[in-house]
Image (cartoon, rainbow, N blue to C red; front, side, top):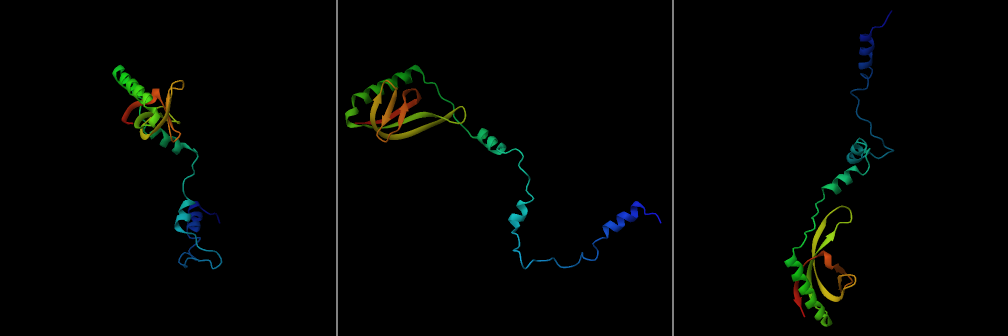
Length: 147
């Protein structure tokens, strides 16, 4: 007797009829897997390792450096001269400067307050008592000059 494709298919679909209504087996020896761990084993494989991080990094906002006009540069130079003349009292100032981003083009404008330790004309930077330094070329504003 020859089997048809329909006979084979029927036999395959009814192969588990004897156990289909039995209760689910729960092992007494092995702890049951948590739903989170069970779901994790079916999560998609990440074939492009680091791709999500690269997309996130690209989407991270940065600011562009604002080129100062001549009036603003002159104003900053005058303030730096005043600051240089009054360094003996370690004046406290608020400075806004551009901090370049280490990972991509652009950066952020940062404002900080601190006591000025020195002004290095060779390195063109303001050095603060806490060890931080700001380059003249990155300066955007000097405020609250107190001495």
